[in-house]
Image (cartoon, rainbow over all chains, first blue to last red; front, side):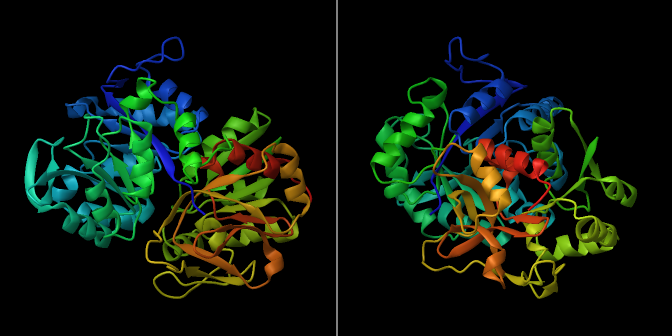
Length: 253
Length: 216
């Protein structure tokens, strides 16, 4: 049976990893290529890069990072942040990214999902959904969680599947950075509404939160940033814990 | 010097395949990404990647006019050939993705949509899954010598399965709601549904075994 994937996420600003990473003496804390290599050698099943560079001119730095990472890390690489067109997708895929993640641009122009899927295959297109609970439902937010769209997250998830997305990266804005665990109700609602894999993200603080994401949330993959970057948990430690709870993960690395 | 050509026909994650071979070639092997017949003719190893739909890949390959020269290499000169993902699926007789399309028919069988055998089975089959050896041929024996681990897993991402006509052609399989063909072999032709170029250490060992392969 397929294994649950553990995915560290690297936030990159102008070519450097931000959210200060705490691997003293292990790797250059700011170098995304070295970070990615470290994770790939220590059990990461995929690696996601999120480009948070504010200005368009500096985005070429991200293409260079993907190219250099892909030269050394033979695990799947996803890149997201600021992808606005099929040409943007191509820039990353042609240097070795395996998937691209779209968020705000898909809300503004949903056909980017279909166009990307037609050109590169559904498996290439990840749609990132940032959702915030408003009363009894969840609303999709864009522009890094700053702008509400009025769109219902569950309806949007179903729609992106129809449009050709191969996967959904779901982040709870309410939980992101809180260390309180995933929004399991949201994760479960989305994962049971679509037939494509859902990556749960946002809120990991305890090792049992990973277990909950799978068992209670129905996620196919779990994405985390700071708990790995600050060395709170190692990927192997998380995987051993998942195995002890009967969850199948990849250990042959 | 040996020459490995990654066939460029407009479909595929060619750069990743190139990177993976480049890491292991140790400068002993020349690696080309090419759509030229003259390069295929000089090659000692051929790799056919493929990402996207069966239809778009087979149409791209047919319109490249490279099939005759590839076939000459593979069936007359018996050079090692590796098809990856849709590059493997195209070896089949027919593909049934969004219609019915003729494949290369080098290995008998049909490529059919994965069965949604239970409600929560996600499609595409995306991620790492265990490989089960169905038939121990010379290649597998060589591969096993390189691997210490009892368990081997590889990275998959696909929605269609190569259902081989002859079960003898199926060398490895995996399970995802149903048995899925992970590797086919016929003489010097290898096809894999998984992505060795994205399968970390196991993937490297697999590609090394392919490069060393002279007999099957």
